[in-house]
Length: 170
Image 1 (cartoon, one colour):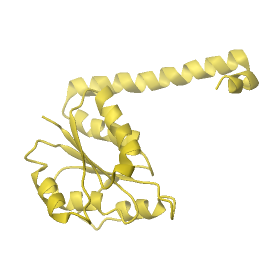
Image 2 (cartoon, rainbow, N blue to C red):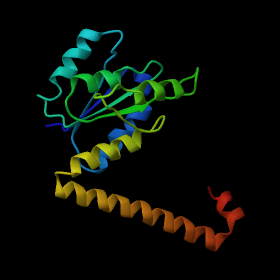
Image 3 (cartoon, rainbow, N blue to C red):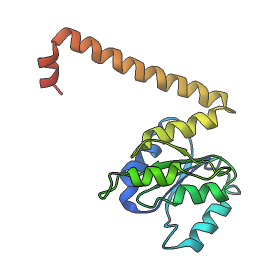
């Protein structure tokens, strides 16, 4: 049963939302991904959001651009955590999306990551789930350790090559 619902308002959001899915895949977390426009098909959206708890979702990751109502509407309906991903937009660079998602009224919170922050949304969803799943917590700790090891390896490479040669190899 999928523990995370991933929803986006448009297929143009897919490259960012895929980063959340990749993290969930890496950590062994089941998810379901779909495209639903809260504005263009509100009846379908309401049906999906109202059924999310029954489907077994423990967290929803919702990405949206411009007016970015999808995450907030999910949070208004779904009783468990919602993580919003503001999408970068051509008009205002995603600040419009960020403000729309982060400025929720009292009582309807949306945990919000950076503009185009798909990977962090996946990690945050995993951390929420790990609060009650020791095996997942251990996988998260191992993932964090691998990030640290990657940085150490890069620093060692820079130390051995010097910055000019390091840059040439990038």
